[in-house]
Amino acid sequence: MENKTGKYFKYAIGEIILVMIGILLALQVNSWNQMRLDRIEEKTILSNLHNEFKENKILSLKNISMMQSAMSANKAIMALMGSSGEELQKHNLDSLFYKSLPASQFTASEQSISNIIQGGRMNIIRNEALKNLLYKWQAQIDAVQIRERALDDWSYDKILTILSKHISLKEMDNNGNYDWNGKSKLRKPYDPLFQSLEYENLLDNFLFLHLMNNVEIQKADTIIDQIIEITKPYAE
Image (cartoon, rainbow, N blue to C red; front, side, top):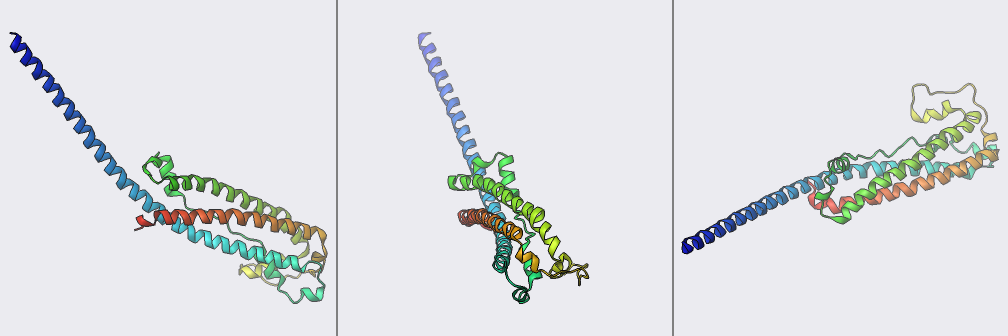
């Protein structure tokens, strides 16, 4: 009886060990399979990010170009402050005014990042530098939008308010090919505007806001370049 009991006990221990090995193997296979699925998903995520930020690069360059053009126009106007009527007639002022009022906003595509964050899939990405850039991108877009709103508010509330008292916005809009453009019967000489200290001060702050906005969009553009570079191996 003692021998039989010992054999049964050994048999039971063996069965338990086999069950445990089976469970461990199943867990290992499941873990391996999950890792495989995660790597497939990671590749898809990185490929989507690469394509999205290549689009954002195009949008960024377009926005930078328009904002730099506006800043150049405002600098040209500033250089003419205090000039005589004879000097002002040598320049296409309506064109300068039109270019000085940018209507561009950097509306970046963020679908891929939204899907990653809202879906709780940030942990799928193994590259820590990329994850940091994605979080940094979100904060930087907010900074750009804050600067854009400040620039827009100053443009509409201050610059356009004083311009509307001294220049013909209708003739300025000739540069935009709008269907209401044409010669204004109410146009006045622009000389008084260029002798206005108030306008010079408003213009000075406008240029400062342009400068601050440019700093933020350049930072955003740098992040775009870094994300494109990291995700390049996954481009399709």
